[in-house]
Image (cartoon, rainbow, N blue to C red; front, side):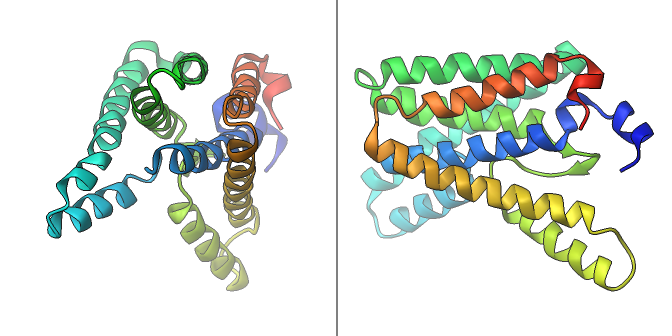
Length: 221
């Protein structure tokens, strides 16, 4: 990537921000699964489990996955409205909302674990996935790796065939690694310090917020 391209790039599309968000995405998914038994980010898994349990008539277990799906849907709607209402400020504002919600979840965890955790984290994941959609101009996801893994593999194949650069697939492969690292750290921290586990993704999001608000020459890689 040349200097001119870097200087004109949106601050929320830089690689460091994408990696921090992917780390936080993996972390929160591990946290939600260990604490609440749902996938906060991967609504595909929640929908599959909903219908698997529903198909055998175990509706009490099936309905366990509905709140997360609904919270994710509400988060997408709020993020869409935020993008329309605030324009380029949407990334910073949504990150600040995510930080506040995660702090609230940490505080309310012992009193309202299901409401705070399941609904709050799915809402946070939805906002993050809907607002942060591109890295260096390429579409990606910070809350799941399926699309990133596909683009990494396709990019390597294209580069090996002489039809592309290794930089894009390298970025997508690194995003997959960051997500996995976040999941590993999240699983460890959730088991070791459950009451303080959300401090780590809050720190990651604070760094994202600072980079989104930094002067352009400081935010550019």
